[in-house]
Image: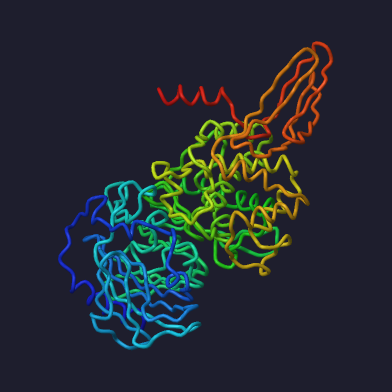
Length: 572
């Protein structure tokens, strides 16, 4: 019944739209600043909305690069409202709206700038609920350089048959590129049902669990998927003539988790090799962090015509089976980490997304260490160290948009939320020790230190909350540590002065912030920890002794050698 109603609505939506060209150029159709912006400060009216359920019926037309959809949104408001504000790209014109089954006239909705304003037939009381059904369709924005630029990717499979190969990316510009949503981190719906209709011979790799498929007389097929608590940008369209590898993973926590890899025909051997990485990588994450958060759904990956992106339970993979010196596929491994750091624990504000990216980046050398030992860990951490730019603080303490965080040209920390974030965590781990570091990590991810399948649910977190967790677990106030590493850009510099048998160490920190970080010193090969109360220490050395400060590179600090190398590499 749902399929037939959807197809009729799809036809209505498309009939109201002008004919589209066969090929839409990257970057077209242009989007408004409102659509391009994701997150940032939001009005009280928008902040009060909660998306209980999104039922999305979308038909995809590869030949004309268009979509047509019906979105049924169940929305609760914490405050009284007369108008609901729902994000949707105006390139997808709305042709019908109903609220609680009552059809609205076209005068009762408007979308001039990419925010659909729906005037309610009756004002919504605080705590009230409305079911809003939106029929829409058109030519969605095409990504210029996915996944760094967002939109649809309309590609063709390699080989002679050249079948449609389609993907969506939406982290930067947001979910409103192809479905009506609440485009800010806390706009996460409790549940999403996807009903994606595609032409004959195409398959849809979707979020969550496959509920079933409905095949029409002409061969078109509707793929019905259901998932819980996805980030708004994690909802995805991934479509191709896929083949499927699948197996069950027996978790160390006693549950069984389905694993699926949706890949292009003709790549069977490479696909099998990547699929063989699923179980050991999953075991690593479960062993050092905790249970896979979506074991009742699946671990899923779909091969895409762009590099990669975290899409809850169906990560995009377009790394073309690249070989790494680490011995594992770093794109696959990184995106899988976002199931813990991004999907189970979601940042409340883009300003806190270093908790997603820094942790997931750090889990890469940790995986290298888990597989091969300390040498691999050190090599990978050194590669990250050379990429740190320190252009802006990792955390501003403000409500930010995605672009204000991920793009240095917009004043954000950019790649530092990955690589500097990883080094901050590396330094923190060496400061408080493995047991406390991983307990703090589990508390951040699960909201408790003893996660087991069924005793936790996805939740939001913030940088201040993480700092509070670390302080509680460490049993001391470490605000000074985060003030220097997160809330200002310049790195602390360790000044060394050697005069005869005396070695003086002093932390030089921007804005003269307190920084009593202990330092390891090797004296003729014997390592000891030197406390730095007040940020200074003086050591007496044996005559002629050879001293190395921080010999195992346990601390993120200013390095003239690294800056010189970066200038040299930039010139080249």
